[in-house]
Image 1 (spheres, helix red, strand yellow):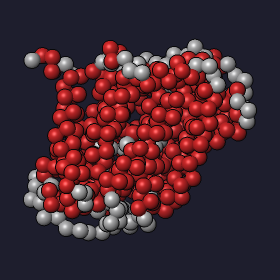
Image 2 (cartoon, rainbow, N blue to C red):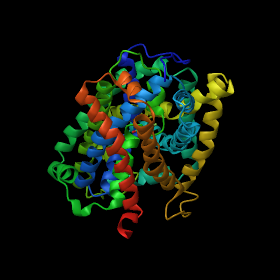
Image 3 (spheres, rainbow, N blue to C red):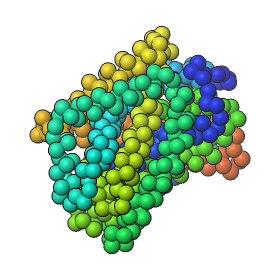
Length: 455
Ligand code: PFF
């Protein structure tokens, strides 16, 4: 039997504060940087459909599961899992689920921060007028110059880690709410403007067709894994980030409604980014599958050619940095909350240690674009490997176990009590979380490893 308790780390001031913070966690580089480039690499439309189905059938139910577990436990994910398992007389090994989350957040932040560093660098490039009337080729050269310079990358990585840790050390509630309140509308407006520009490129229809008309023959099982992994990544699921935010959630808030709002806002931002980028790609004869530099090699072309481009370009990259910042905070929050609870550290000390460790691992990503560019493991660079392992393996596995814990381990009474849904709503959530999501993850894993074909 689990009972109600309150969080050691305070509570959101309202339901909207939670929605804003969780949306701040969800909307980030994943939507604007990663979604377009993996869509480009995986052939477009069919990939987008699989991604959308994963958001609806796995992402939303799982987000509800994470929030309800967090709110029930009211501690860091490690201690929440430990407490809920102990109270229900379940196996203590459930706490390791909290641990994988801490590890995933820390590993993701180590490379996330390097890419956020690119966005920081681009704020200054945009402000300095470097994109003015530049050709696609010149913009490409600017990007290569940045990533091939380890010192510059290191400097931006360091600045971003310090920025993140400063906010985390103050406690996530203060400041985050205000930051996201202006960030979301700003980002939305600028993306709408970029979509407007994309319409004027003459290749808008081609871009839309790439993004929305599916050709399932292009879809490999590896692409399906990437689409599913991205659904977890973009909604910040499978590692306890949403769970820890849920632990600060007031009692009377509807978990289903808030989850749908967050997932919808997140998806809208990703689709708008795609709608802005692909027409530019085709208008300039660029390659949709060019990889992780995609937005940095397309959007500057738009800014370089539109009236007021210096201003809007600068503003866009500032907002992108903010979006990355509000996500980064949630990536490291499970680790920091645990250090405070279990190691008796102050938030400042906990943030400093977590930041230092993340910074060190981030060096691997910094060097993977230059000094170690030729070093490959399983055919991937350090950065690609870390991204692949976290987004496509650790997060879906974490999500799988969270879904199992919520529906096979926790009693129905607890989940009903937290979700407060009508009969049909609850049944739908229960079936999706208990059967559909776990089976989907398992089948996609088996498919990609080729095990399903062996039989
Ligand atoms: N959802 C973030 C993005 O799309 O950029 C990344 C992220 C944040 C992933 C927090 C996981 C997480 F726990």
